[in-house]
Amino acid sequence: MKVLDGMWRDVPVASSEDLTGARRRLMDGMHARRRVVTAPRLLVAAGVVAAAVATPLVAGGGTPAYAVTENPDGTITVALDEMRDPEGLQADLLAAGVTADVSFLAPHTRCADPRFEGVDPSYGSPGHTEAQMRAGVERWRSFEATQVVDVREIRIRPEFIRPGETLVLEFRDNQNAQRPWRLGAWLARAGSPVKPCTPVPDAG
Image 1: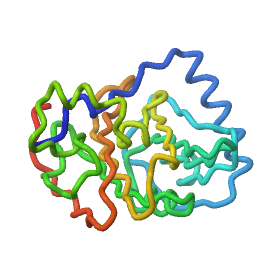
Image 2 (image 1 turned 45 degrees about the horizontal axis):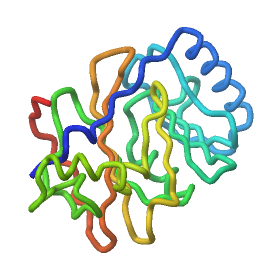
Image 3 (image 1 turned 30 degrees about the horizontal axis):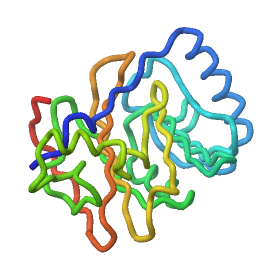
Image 4 (image 1 turned 60 degrees about the horizontal axis):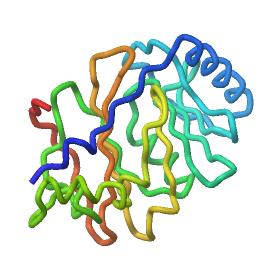
């Protein structure tokens, strides 16, 4: 059974003031960056959001494709400006202490399942009704580990990721400048390899 539809999360709409402030934070963060990796532009962005709370790992020359920021409270912020270089994003997350599998998908596609064994019913749910699944969402670690917090920005909370588990992130192009992508985020059980993403059509 495929994932619960509710686990795909839309990016919230940002105001023009949000985007103006985000651009300023990004420029401040770029002056403090400690490592740069190559990630050419793929998609035209309609605004940039990045956290400047801690030292970011910035990808790209000029306008970055993404920024990974380790925050003082132990959380990790990923600001995704362009859906490019998933391997680079995985490497930067690993440097920040999180083992991740990242896929960037075209509109109306998804990764063929099953790819892994999930830690909770958010990915595959044999024996669970949809009502039971929805009732348990707030207790699922997959839901707690990764949350969309702003336009082009997610926050990862490593305290909900146990040793050996993989954070699986599937970003799907939403063809919408104000909601540029949708996110599917799950935790793969320790010892469960994550198969490569094979894109297939998806009407959702």
